[in-house]
Length: 282
Image (cartoon, rainbow, N blue to C red; front, side, top):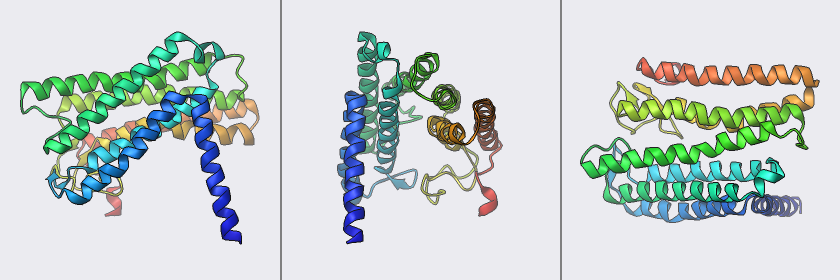
C-alpha cells in the first residue's frame, strides 16, 4: 500500500513538473524532451557498436552531451517562468529562443555524426572541412550558452519580480556566471587543442561518472563546474533566502558565488599543472 502511494505521488510529481516546464517555455521544454527521447537510440547504438575513440565507446560522448543539454534546456525552461512578462512575451525572445534551439540541434547532429563516423567532434584538425565545422560549432556553443547570460540579466533587472530578492539575485548571478565562466574555460580548451594536460590522453579508466583523467590534468573539470553555476548558486541562494535575513542573505550569496568562481579557477589552474582532480583519492 505504502509503495503504491509513493509510486503514485512520484508519477504525479513528474507529470506536474513536465507540465510546468511546458507552461513556462514550450520550445525549450519540447527540445529537452526530444533530447531525452534521443538517449534511448544512442544507448542502443552504444550496445551494438563496439568501436572506440580515445579508448571508450564512440557513443558515450553523444550520450553525455544529450544529458547535459537536456538539463540545460530544462533549467532554462524553468527559469523562463521568472522572466519579466514584457520579455517573455516579446517577439525578440521567441526569435532568440528559436536560435538557441537551432544551435543545440546543430551541435547534437554534429556530435552524433562524428560518433557514427568514428572521428573526433572536438579538436578535429584532420581536414579543412573538419577544422571549419569545429570552428562553426564553437560559435554555436557560444550562442547557445548566451541564453544563460540573457536570462540572468533580465531576471536581475526585473524590479517587479515576485521572487524573493536574495533568491532572485542568486539566480541572476548563477546564470551570468555560467556564461562568463564557460566561455572562458571552453575558449581556452578550444585554443589549446585538447582538454588533457599531460597523462595518457585516454578516457579509459577515467574518474566516474564523468570520465575525467586520473593520470593528468583535465580541463573538463573546470568546464563542468562552470556550466553548473546556474544550479549551484541559485540552490544556495534558495536556502539562504529562507534561513537568513535579507542583508545577511545577500552577503552569503555573494560569498558563495565568489567561492564558486574560486573553485572553477582552482580546478582550471590545477588541470593546467597536469594534476588530476581529487588525485589524493587514488
